Amino acid sequence: MAKSTHLPRFYILLVFCINSDIILNFAMGQAEGQGAWCVAKPSSTGEELGENLSFACRYTDCSIIVDGGSCFFPNTTFNHASVAMNLYYQAHGRHFWNCNFHDSGLITVIDPSYGDCRYAYTHNV
Image (cartoon, rainbow, N blue to C red):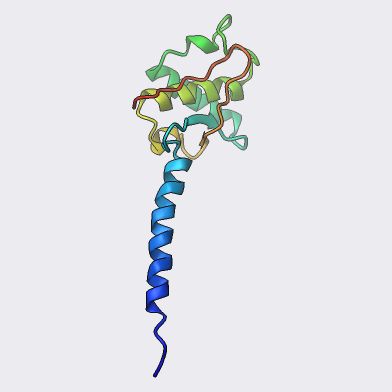
C-alpha cells in the first residue's frame, strides 16, 4: 500500500499561509507597532522623480521641502521626491498602491528621517 503524503503537504501549506500573512503585514509596515514610510527608488530617473514630486505636492503640504523647511537639505530631486511621496502615502492611508508612483516608489519599515528632517508617519490610519 502506498504511503500518503497529502497530510504533511497540507500542514506545510497551512503554515506557509499563516506565516505569509505575517510577513506581508510586516512588509506593509502594519505589524503591531511597526512603522512604514514611502521613499523613491534609487533607480528612479530624474523625470520620474520630478513627476512624483509635482503629483504628491498637488495633494499634500510640501512646505517642509521648500527653502527654509526642515527637509530642504540635501537640496536634491531625489530627497525632495522621497519626502513628498511619503507625505502623499501617509495622507492617503498607507496602502501599498499609494507608494507605487508608476513603480518608482518603495515602502520601507526603517524610518528615513535624518537630522531635523522628520518623515511624516500617521499612526492611526
